[in-house]
Every structure is written in C-alpha cells, then in structure tokens.
Length: 431
Ligand SMILES: O=C(O)C1=C[C@@H](OP(=O)(O)O)[C@@H](O)[C@H](O)C1
Ligand SMILES: C=C(OP(=O)(O)O)C(=O)O
Image 1 (spheres, rainbow, N blue to C red):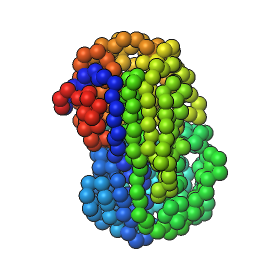
Image 2: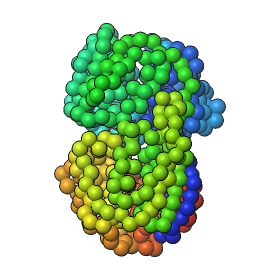
Image 3: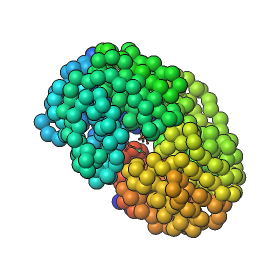
Image 4: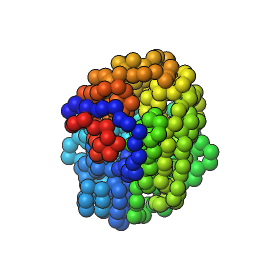
C-alpha cells in the first residue's frame, strides 16, 4: 500500500494512541507463566504483539481475545509451557524473539524460533551468549549469531552479566531466564534501558530488585494480575512531533505512558523549544501515564547522545525530522544500535530526508542534520520498517505539496489506527 500525505496547516487535536508495544508483549509472556488468570486492557493489537500471542498459544497457553484490545490469559505457572508442534514465528518482532529466547532457555523442551527477512538479519548473539553462560543450549545460523534459533532448555545456573549494550531486550531475556535459575541472577547495563519487565515482574509478585544500572532477579512463582496498558509514547511521538514542527499547532495525547526510561523525546522537544505540559499524571499497573500537550513554536537544533539514547531509541527517526525543521545543526551520536533495528534506520533516514531536500548526513554512530530549510514533498521508501514509514509521513505533513510513502502497510506492526489519527490532523490525502 502506498500512503499519500499532504502538507497541513496548524492544527488543534486531542487524541489517544494504542497501547504500549513493549508492555503488551510482556503482559502476554509474563501472564502465560504466572499462576492464575491475567487480564490485559488496552493491549496493542499490532502485528508484533499478535506474534507474541501466537507463539504463547503454540506453547500451550490459552489466551482469549475478549476484544481486539482485551485479553484473558490462563497462566500455566513457571513450569507449565509445552513443547510447540512446529517452529515459532515472531514475524518482524525483535522483542518477541529475544524475550522468548530467555523464557525458552529454562524450559525442559526443544524450540525453534524464526521470523521475517528483517528478523533473520538482526543480531541474536547478544542473547545467545549470556543464555549459554547460564547453561542453555542454543544454535543459530552464522555461528549461532542469526535466526532461526534452536533452543534446548536446561536447568539454568544463575549468572552476573555485564551487558555490553544498553538493551532492554537483552536485559529482559536474562531476567526471564533468571526465573528458572538456581540462585540470584543479575544484569548490569552501561546505561538504563526501559524497565517494563522489572516493573511487571514486581507487579506479578516476582522477586526483583533494581539498584542503579543493575537488576537482580531470584527464581520464584508469579501470580496473575489485571494489567492496564498506557498509550505508547513511541507511537505518540509522531503526533507530538507533528505539533512541534508546525508552529501554532497544539496536540494533546491522553493516557500516554510516561515511564522515565522512555521520556527522552519529551526532554529533547522541550530543549528544542516546544512547549510541553503534562496533566493528570498517575500510576496504573506499575506504570506512570498522563495527558501530554505540545504547542509548536520555532525550534532550535540540539545535540543528542550518551545515556539519553536508550531513553529515546525508537524516536530517533522522528527526531531526525524535527532536526530538519530546527534552526542550526542537530547532532545525534552514540546511536549505532539503530543500524540493527528493523532496517538500518540511520541510513534510511539520511536517504529518505535527502529526497525532500534536507541536508542530512549519516555518521558512524548517528546523524548530522542542518535544519530549517524549505522542503518539497517526495516519494519515499519504507524499507518495510514501520518507524521509517511513519517518520516519512511526518516529514510529508510539513513539506510542500504531496508526499508518497511506498509499502506503508508495515505501519500495522506497531500502530494500527495511525491513518485515522493522521486524518484528524488533516494530513491524509487517500489510503
Ligand atoms: O524491550 C523492548 O520492548 C524494546 C527495546 C528496544 O530494543 P533494544 O532493547 O534492542 O534496544 C526497542 O528498540 C524496541 O522497540 C522494544
Ligand atoms: C525496534 C523495534 O522493535 P523490535 O526490536 O521489537 O522489532 C521498534 O518497534 O522500533
């Protein structure tokens, strides 16, 4: 499907975005291995999270969809999963393959996990290495670095793992395996990545402690819970940014997740000059949420790097667009991880924003963007990467004339309903 976007005028809108993708995955996996029933409200029915549901069903878990966004999971307890009759297909979802690898490492059976062409290019040694240290048997292509992965679970040893990368997927895989280990397992990361697994395990009565950049988990049964999921800040980011880059616009996103390990985008937009207000802040199911408003005015460039990067890792394509609209040179560094996401997101954004006439250059670990130009609509590639497709659409809202995003169906990976939200701003030509 090709998406057509036209330049929009300053707008006022109040919207909600679908449930958080990271928390949705975790609610299904953790609910599946808890004792008793877990109910999930505001579950994200995006393709990635549906892949997680399918994998857990193949492992013997009964998951009832009460509606597209409400699930009832009959937890099977820590040792109740069953060997799947076929390979497990995670589709496009890195979170599913890495977290599930951790879960399967402690099971007394054999599993094969694979996914689409993008998943089969993404690095898996980052989870295979620590899980093997714990005693699991794991094989993969390219000397165990690439999916498909074959995993034979074993009784696991507790380890203390110093992760070379600030990755919540690596941390979570080890913490989930740690539930099956023979003592305290810890993970120390170089900077704090999103902590949804830690919060949810604590909510399910797991034994988990966080001390700075180190998280410690002990084996122990989990108890099913009612989980209510906040709106996904990574999906909201496209609309927060739309208001920020079109001066005179105002948007409010209701019930948006505000977990501090995810709110880097708000800090950067504020530093660039957008007016941001948070109201109705509260904690539900262990996660902070609130109503966030952004008022657009003229923006100035910023430098983004260091410990901030994991706190806005999925928002860098959006920030590249915002940088193109800001006065001065925006510098993004320490973001080499973007090369191993669904696509090489640094290269993709440099290539696609250039088509609009932006002055943007890919560096070894980031982007340099000279902003505040006048841009013309362009025909863009999505690279079958949902975040690239939506970032190109965002640029189209501010560029003269019409923009086309090819192969935009990948947006359903994380944001079903994106086009409806876009229509509310007035930027949709047709779909
Ligand atoms: O744990 C998670 O749910 C995620 C962690 C991040 O990946 P890394 O942990 O690999 O950085 C992020 O990019 C991804 O969209 C979701
Ligand atoms: C990187 C992402 O997801 P995953 O790693 O789960 O494929 C993302 O949603 O931007």
